[in-house]
Length: 223
Image (cartoon, rainbow, N blue to C red; front, side, top):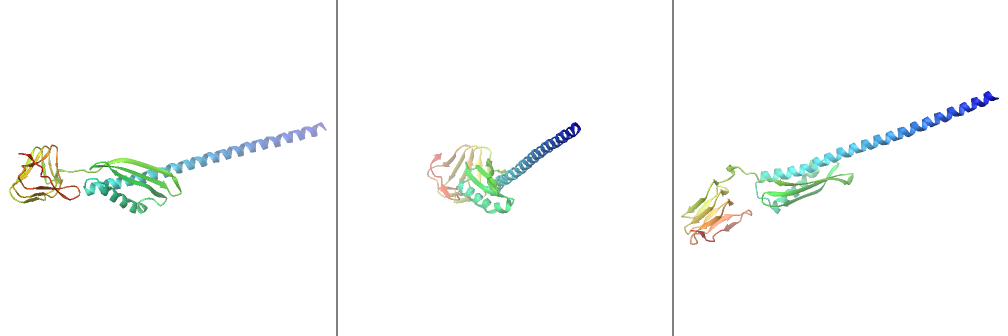
């Protein structure tokens, strides 16, 4: 009888031990699966956010390339034009699972604008990456100018004259005058110093501004 009792006890102990081991094994496997699944989701999210970052950067590069190719002063009209153009082509430029959530350009001066671009996951609009950057896109070479002078410059004409060579710049003052006849500049004039009308009895001098409008600068000054 004692031998039978001992066999029964040993059998129960073995079953209990196997049950405990199986339970621990199952718990461990479940934990590993959860950890692996969480790591996989984290990797997928990081990859998706990296793709959204690159998609947002494409908006910055599009803006910079457009401003450089246009070679015009940065203003609200140009910013609106760039914004509308990028929004129109964004669906074909961006991956199918990423959408453009925001595209905003704010002009700060004639050379610089602030661009904000945000892209989001199509399946989760709260999963979004936004970039804001200042872009300065006006790069000039001397060949872009009709006249580029490294000191004070004087321009004078005795008859009606129209200068169509391009922008005029001087690293000093510019003195412009004409004897009783109009003088037209078909582009902008800039100077490190002052731009002065030479004499109050001369003809009007017209300079085309950033909106392509001829503006008279006759206001007295030098002479």
